Structure formats: C-alpha cells, structure tokens
Length: 362
Image (cartoon, rainbow, N blue to C red):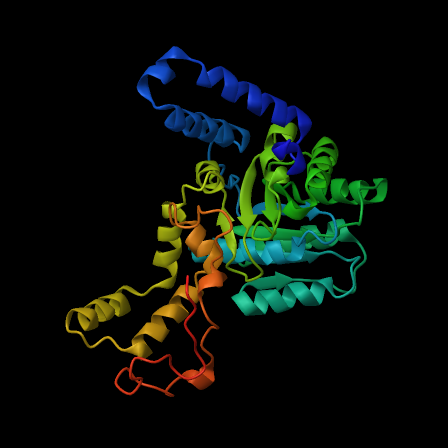
C-alpha cells in the first residue's frame, strides 16, 4: 500500500514486492547475512534495477555539433532544463549553443536568452519566423559555424499531449536529426509523468528523460516507475531552480538515499565543486593555530549554502536524519543576516547567544 500511495505504478509495485520476497528466501543470502542486512541489501538491489540499473550518459553523434532535442509538456521546466543542461556541458569543458525553437509560448525566446546571458552560453533565435523546423535547422547550422560541441533545441510544449504538438515535434526531429531526444517531466505529477513519457516515446522516440523538481515533496512514484514502464532511462534530475541544480542520474545513489543510507559520492562531488582547496587549507591552518573565529565560521556556512538547501546536504550523510520526525530546521535558530556580521566577536559574547540569535534545546 505504501508504494501505491506513493503513486508507484501497480505493475512495478507488484514486481518489486515479488522480487524482494524471492531474493530474501534464497538460502545463500540467509546464511551470509542477518535478517536486517538481508532486507536492506535485497531492497537496495531491487530499487537500483527499477531505477534503471546503471548510469546512462549523453551519447554524442559522429558529427559536430551533436544535437539534443528537448521536448515536454508545459510547466515541466523544459526551457530552464535546457539552460541547466547547457551549463552542465559547459562546466564539463564542452561548448553548447541553445536554439530557441519554442515559437508558441509568449516570452519563451526572451526567457532562453536571459538564461543564456546568465550562464554565458550563445542562444540562436529568429523571432520573425513562424516556421519551427526551419528555426531549429538554422540554429543547428549556426552552432556548427560557432564550432559548438552541442546544439540544444528548446521546443514548444502543450498542457496535454495532442496531435498538433506531436506533428510539430516530428517535423522538427526530421529537420535536425537529433542524437539525443530528451523528455523533460515533472516528478511531482507522479503517474501523469509516466503516461506522458509513454505517449512521447510512442510518437517521437525518446533516448532519455530529465526529471525536474526532484527536490520537492514528490513521493517518488514517477522516478520508481518511469524507466520500468517506458524502457526509457533517466539521464538527469533537476534538484532546484538554479542553473547549476542539475545532476547526472545515478540509480544506486538515489536508492541509497531512499533507504536512508546517505549519498557520500554526490556529497563529495558537490563539495569539490563549491569549496576552494586553498581556502580549505587556510581554514585548516586557522583551526590548528586556534585563530578560527566567527567570521570564518560564517564564511564556511555561506560556502555550505552554495551546495544547496541544507536539508538536501544532510540527507546525503548516512544515518543523520534517520530518526522519524527529525527536522533539519527544528534544532536551529534563524539564519544570520547581513546585519549580524560584525555585531559581536568571540571575546565580547560572554558565552551568551549573539544578538538576534537564540539557542533551542534538542
């Protein structure tokens, strides 16, 4: 019932339970592990398989640029996901160009251009044209002229799948011959995301999925169901609104998080991306010499904040938030504001809470 209440597909839930029952009763497993360890291991393996089994990376084509066609329904975050993907590729040392081929939604072109300026990625647009396939094709040509490694084509969406949308996408796909066709789906929509993926895959032919809003209160049903039902792998997940909030999808890491075992590898990746080694060495020196003060501590907190919401960071630490009902925010006072800087020092606080702060008992 818990799986069904989490909006997991019924067939997937039934197969998941059957596999756990079968694997748990094998004699070799029973002899080597305690009952508790056995259940955790079997459940983890089953979750990894349901989530896709392995990492699926972007597949570049033989030509340059490789073309990524972004498709999806309105509200899933397709345009933002295009910018996040461009930022991800740029951080990986590759040169992307975004193509504004959404000629239906008001201000879609302006939104993509604003995001392109924010991440310093070129955007091709032709606001005067109403021919979507031509705009997409011309955008890919422009990316080739710029010697870009990737051309990311942002297309129009609809509030629901319809014949007009599919016909337009089929024409665009024929015009640009994409190496990757990625469907952007909202993880919060549960089974609706699975149904949309099925419909797009039947008509367009998908090579991968980007699941957005995975940082929200989604019950996880879509992530657990979508690959098993559609056969299309999840390649990326969106974990926030910022342009750097896109992660490659690792089934084993998500399974570990679901089971409360943390995700140290992703935590290390985030730390390496947000912490400067020279600054870290300086902090270590100050701690050893006992000169580490509250200004340094505040700087560390600000660096930690760059890694994302503190609740997400703490969830990656094994066992930290396992206690039922434990809240990340329930044991802390308010966060320091810019007005608090310089209001106090370690010497004049006298052991009392600094101005504007308070201590709360666990």
